[in-house]
Image 1: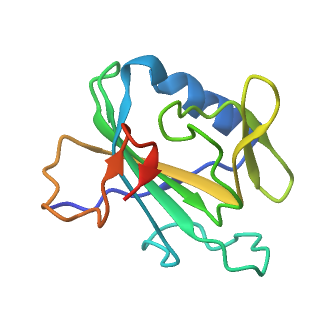
Image 2: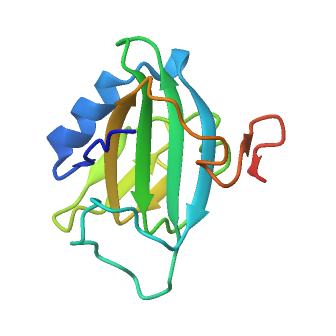
Length: 143
């Protein structure tokens, strides 16, 4: 399986471009997991809080652009808002330290984190168990 490089989100325009590139209405979370481990190739210039928040990795189908799947990495996630993974999007803001605040339509925190990165691994087959825990949209929680 070929390694696909991560692309970091470094600016507000990067965040907006990624948000526009993914057809959120037709995409859904396939799997997600949290860990304190940082995947190889992710940005190292992360403004960590010192509280040891975990990293959230999300695998989504992305059919609008025929890229197959998109993998998102949210580093140092401060909180995971209600319905964050069932209504995922990237509308929000990024500050000068590259911290990202994904917000709800009411301006409430949905998914604040220290950094965001993504990659399009295409339709490459993932080994069973590639993601350690499956997302259960019916129960709106990580298993």
